[in-house]
View (cartoon, rainbow, N blue to C red):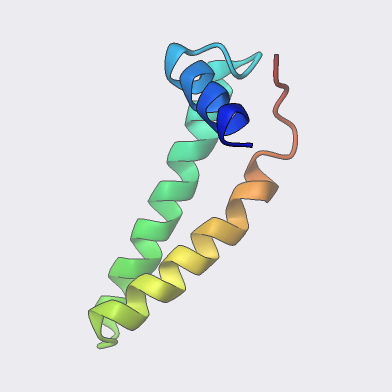
Length: 74
């Protein structure tokens, strides 16, 4: 299992994991941006940093499978 994870990480950083790497990176950036915006909005609303980061991370993490649903792997 560890070898599979290590291999996937290596392929990702070499740009050979996805058939369309630009689309994958765009979707990943969109998820990160969404999490950051939720965190900033929660902080502006007066919520403490730790709960804000937990909520933003949970929402952004739950969003990733939706964003990656149409990606093709090599």
